[in-house]
Length: 89
Image (cartoon, rainbow, N blue to C red; front, side, top):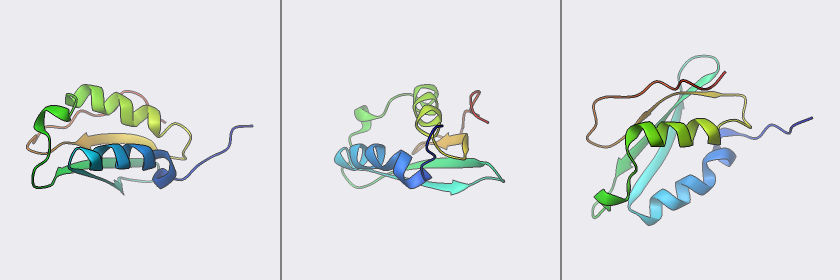
């Protein structure tokens, strides 16, 4: 049986990695079993360090696999578009 982890636990390593490049990673619930991952730039953030939105969406969807949640979408700084996850629950 697989062990379920919290969303915070599942995203912890990504939160630390993003902070190194000057970004804040947060999440919020989007319905009963979905979350939205938001990435915001701080002063001096490395603009070239972010992967494209479709890639980040896949990374976050996979990271959430051991949780009870699936990914609704990812929001990147300066990008008004979001890519709904095609994976998930």
